Amino acid sequence: MRDAASFLRQEYEDLVRQDLDWKLRILGGPSTPWCTVDGKKVLMLCSNNYLGLSNHPKLKAAATEAIKTHGAGSGSVRSIAGTMDLHIELERRLAKFKGAEASLVFQTGFAANAGLIPQLAGKGDLIVSDELNHGSIIDGVRLTPAERRVYGHADADDLAKVLDEAERASPQFRRILIITDGVFSMDGDIAPLDKVSALGAEHGAMVYVDDAHGEGVLGEGGRGIVSHFGLPRDKVHVEMGTFSKAFGVIGGHVSGSSDLVNFAYNKSRTWLLSGSHPPAVVAACIAAVDVLEQEPQLVRNLWDNTTYFKKAMRDLGFDIGRSETPITPVMVGEVAKAKRLSSRLFELGVFALPIVYPVVAQGKARIRTIMNAALTEEDLDIAIGAFETAGKELEILPAKSAA
Image (cartoon, rainbow, N blue to C red; front, side, top):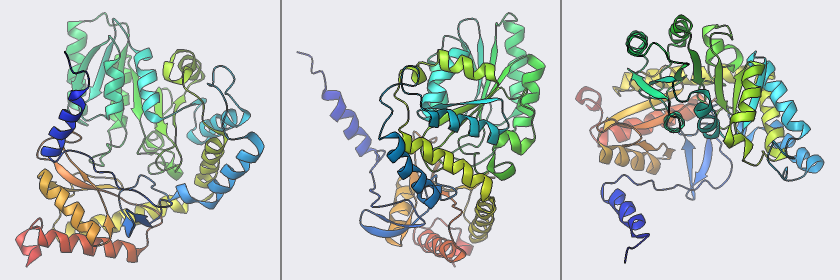
């Protein structure tokens, strides 16, 4: 007889043998610069909570009040009975913040990509995607029958070549969709969206940017990558984002034209068939937009901390790759060494996780650190000192730095 479920344990044990399994750490309280993880007080250096909003008093107060006025849940999907006045207010506020005609909130960022991409391109269409795009983009593309091409990472010249070759081979594509991350989550570099959008216009292609790690980080007051490059809205047709990172809450969204939003909520099955956000979540997201508009110093603090940390790590001799943002990878190479470095940092009071294959390529294991606006210079010095100590012990730092 066939054993229907034996593969579950076998494949997990294979991951354990290769040291590729995720070992979950437990956060015992809010995500703050100093927090409790597995019962130990540590400095948080790997959260996506860029601006510290997940524990901001205005967000907590808004969430508490919304439970009193609107209850614990919506009771339905958005398309039936789950659209509350709070959902509409959030989308209105988000569109204004983004400088777009309209916005639509999805349950998660993954749901936005997985639900919308398959509706934007189908049979007879072409999708052209950056080779290092996020897994949610990859899965969204896999759900379409469209033809697919991949261009070299953040390489506008290669994108131009791929588009030219594809159109020469099949000049009758109904639609072309170019998709890129805005900030690449493992390396911290920025997509050349100005060049990508120009190529999109040249080829009559729709441009779709996943700006999950750009919101609250890039652009005027944290408005994202479209603002960062000063691009007109008709050059970037879909700006996708998330409330789960710099906004400090949870949820995904897209911003663009009213036509895009009307299309998206009528066609995206992830939106149509998933329950809507509870009132507390929606109210906290609205409050996050308020904070970004009213407290611009948070974004400045984030970049001050980023500059300070990057310089110190480079001065010590660490390889931090091509990062241009608060995402700062500390490149190690070997999986086992990256995991040892993470464990040693934890012993020294710094929580920073290893990122290994298959999330990144073989031989590219690293510790991914993420800066936070709430970190003090003293906090950063503690983190830098822990990296220096562990880097010397594990012989990651070059000999001249370890002397």
